Image 1: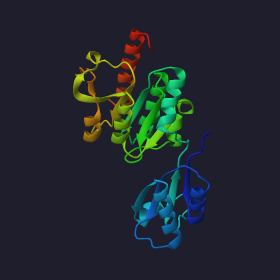
Image 2: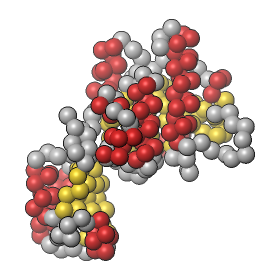
Image 3: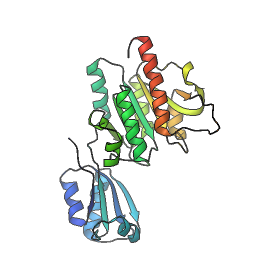
Image 4: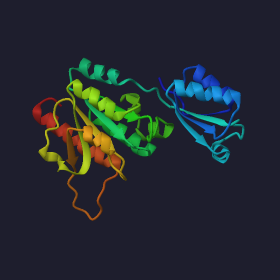
Length: 250
């Protein structure tokens, strides 16, 4: 089931969104606002684990399409998120070793959509994104994914490092993209694996990188030193596909 991406403005509209169980990615609240209903909305957002940004009124004015935000604007997701366990269950039902994408700091919705498209075509069972410093499942993401979002589930988690630790206990291995890593062709990328991709500026965060079992470098011969995040994800994903096919498990 999908949602139309929506910017919800005003105290009553935002309260109703939370009451109805709608997936709210982000809540923007006027900094210093002591309005009772807005404070109630903020408490409900915290209870549901929603990302909250306290911003100047001018920011809300610029975001508002109606001019009637009343000190609060919510951004609702275009699609439902799934649970990590549901992704693993789907892999088990197919009799396949789990193949996951974990994205650290991918804030550009076009990059996120393109990566979800690649994940689908490469046969990955799902994508995991963090709540913070990450694009959500907006309509832009859905369009850029070229329909893949209908087939490739996305889970949103509070802490990527904790998820990696838990999945390691279940037998998964993790490889992250890093220029200083081992040439990807020299790594064993078969079996249950999570492919960790960072943004093209700072790459995979230190704490997440330290939890990974391997770091993979993509050979580059040009004068610039980095690939677009979605392109890097595609190159590494298809090395995983190549090795799985060679092993007879792809």
